[in-house]
Image (cartoon, rainbow, N blue to C red; front, side, top):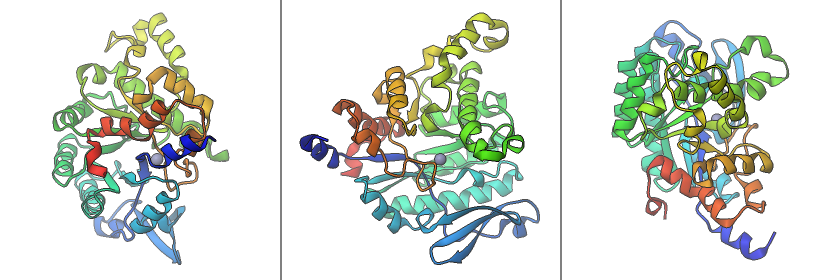
Length: 346
Ligand SMILES: [Zn+2]
């Protein structure tokens, strides 16, 4: 590590555009709505809580999942000032009745909006919306905009339906019109029940899901029809970028199967969307930078979960990447994606 370089990156603005948060207390939605495995929290001991899904244990989380001051402290250890926060995908609840999911979404979005108001230099918010019902989703999307959120986080499929389904198009159209960024996060992983062992839904299912979402939005013509829609794919685009050769070849050799709704080569869309940098592998990141250009790769961590880059870009800081690329990754790309100016954070 060269001292001068280290010093310059230390003072550089860092925006982590992929982090998850949950309110400390959640309403008992299952009791209120009278059905469903809605998530609730059992606070078990100091600073710990069990996320319960119906009666079933889902995951133990720590205080840094909800304590906004503690989060800012922990981030400062990695010289990161800004956290773009969104809910934990298991809370999407797309399976619920639309109005119930709207109520749940409002609760989560209001919590995030409150943090954005109270800590304008530390928190930027993405909302969640009831994707299972187009009109209700757009209503909450508009409200997200009104309460100061700058985008939404959505799942990679909605109750197993691909994002290319016609019913979702008006939602994407509204995002473009309202200038709201979209983060696609893998969830409801395909084959989930069949691949339980070895954490495979997370290790294999998630990258595949993100590629499924990217392929659906490209082949379905959503990106072609909405060129100003600002989409970011989680986990460095999942397996999409690393298998683009195969995907392109499929488009060329079997257009009867692939090019039925959009006649543009999928490779044309590379560099027109954003991805985060969560690769845990500098060579994989360099491959992605080579394809996307550094202005389309954002610093993301997946904090505070164990599969995330909890040193928040240290492997990038320690790398031999050009300073310009590091600057783009650490904040410029996220400012572009979120349509924000740097002055907001200085
Ligand atoms: Zn995540």
